[in-house]
Image 1 (tube, rainbow, N blue to C red):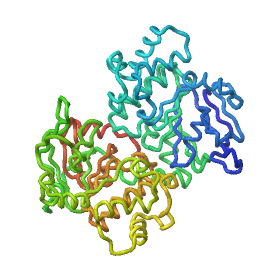
Image 2 (cartoon, rainbow, N blue to C red):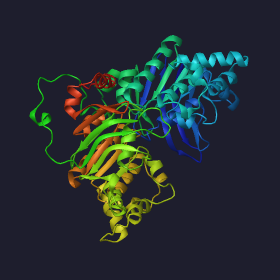
Image 3 (tube, helix red, strand yellow):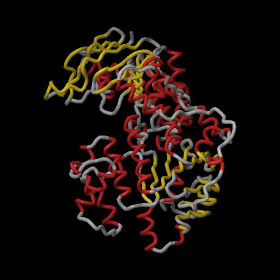
Image 4 (cartoon, rainbow, N blue to C red):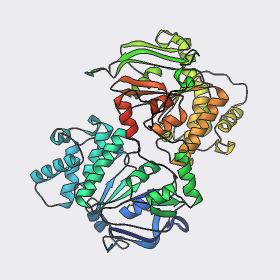
Length: 533
């Protein structure tokens, strides 16, 4: 075995009775992929950090042990750990922007990990770094090696991390949520590249993920963690298609209650074939926009609409124009823009200051990372009241009553009022962000990847919450997502974007069952396969 974790327990250093991992055992063979799945707080990241020897000083291994290719790591010194990390142990982390140095060219960052572990000349290190970049699936590696991280796409940056993690042919590669922020087509290419490297080198992969579809398609075996304990383990097809434990069944149910299929239907129902007769709340007409100093338009004659109380999902790979559309609707683009964006029939580009203030109240947004969109120093109450104060919105009740009502609407209690973001879970922070968006009683909420960073159970809770709020309040959603399974679950209509154009649009069921463009078919075929018996 490449990795053997035997009865591992990790506790708080100052309080050994508080255990984050309890009696965890697992093993990974050469050339095998083992997926560790579970909700946020289950212990996945703690396990990965223990294997990497990167536990913070506040945590300690209280019992059990870790062996890497027969070497006992329990008593390894920091010098030994530094020798192992980057050579025998490789890592592909989740967020490339946080893990790549913005001040250094990408080629130099790959060279650094090579020269740290191999005594070779700078010329040879350069050649090996280019080979690692090419092996990670990057075309023209010599050109890309001269670029800085901000000059690369999200998929390219993730491949650079793969190059860094595999440059020294590690025995074990830990892939910690390596594709959670990527669209399905880039995700497939990244995972295919990891699989190719694995086949060529025999590297074992420990895949940390909250995406059960990904685990089902890519892992040989699965370990399910819950509250620091292994509750189920076995072949991925057996565990995920025939779970025996209640917790695993809950995880699977959260994924599979709306299946994703590409099976053609004989005919489209009248309900899905007939366009809605209701007047549009949001109407985007022939929108074309080019960023300053850009050589090509980011948007090319984009048209879409959302009826009151309905949801439009906007899907497509990175760089397709989804974010630019949201910026246009939020009035955040600078420079000339042709076409129209209308709310309730009013062109937002021809509005008075009073109308613009009303627009800020009527159109709100919920973003991907609630930790970044909430002020870390402000209480929940302060964050909720800020939009009301900045927009001059009068309320009939006292501030504490307004806050309590807003929290209740998103399933939170008054006890959360005085907490700051770091005292909330990921799901709770996103509920606060939703409450903050809804507190002005908007007509349209733009949801920009609002669940991509959340585990599958919390994803389901947030999606159910959004659907219930729409039913209760009649609010419309423009839902930006790279997850087509999520789009099918929540959206009435779906628009598919590619290279700044809408290439397919219509009822969600029609788009999924009768795609009208090759690109839509490519997106659907890239969804990880997962079916529960």
